[in-house]
Image (cartoon, rainbow, N blue to C red):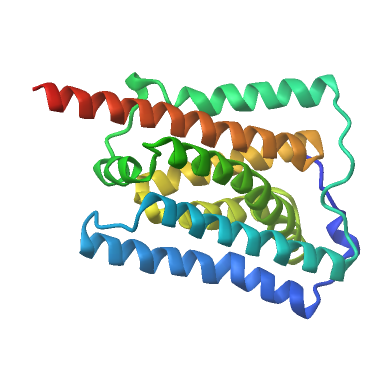
Length: 236
C-alpha cells in the first residue's frame, strides 16, 4: 500500500495536534452526543436545506483546516493526477462494490437509519441541487481530511499502514452516527475501502470521485424509493 506522504520524514507540529484532536476525537464525540439527542427527540429535524448548509459549512472548515496543517507541515496531499489503467480499474471496482449495497435484496434492517435517510434525501428541485453540491463537497473535504491528512498524522504516531487506516475509518464511521449505528458501521467500512483505493492508486483523486458518485447515486436511488413509497401510501 502506498502513502501519499512518507510519514517517516514528518514530525507533528502544534496545529497538526489540534487537527488530530479535532477530527479524531472532537467530531466523533459531537456526533455521538447528536445521535443521543436525536434518539431522545425522535425524528424532529431542521429543514433539509438547513442540514445541507450545515454540511457545506463543516466541509469548508475541514478543507481549510487540512490546507493550513498541510502548509504548516510542508506536505502536498493532492499531487497532480495522471490517469493510468490501474487507477481506472481500481476506481471502477470500488464504485461497483459501493453500489452493490443499493440493491433492494441486500437492504439491512435498520429502522433508525431508514427513518433518518428519508428525512435527509432531497424532495424538491432546489433540494436536489443542494444535495448534489453537498455530495461534491463531501467527496473533496472528507477524503482530504480522513484518507489524506488524518491518516498521514496517525501513520506518524502509530506506524504502519493498516492500523492508521482502521483508526481513521472508525472516526469516519462515528461522524456518520446521524443515521444510526448500523449506518455508521457501513460508513466505516466504506471509509476503509476508500483507504484501500488511496493505498492502491497513490492518489486522493480516485477516492474523491468514487466518494462523490457513491453519495450522489445512493441519494438519488433512496430519494426515488422514498417518493414511490409515499405515492403508494397516498394511493392506499
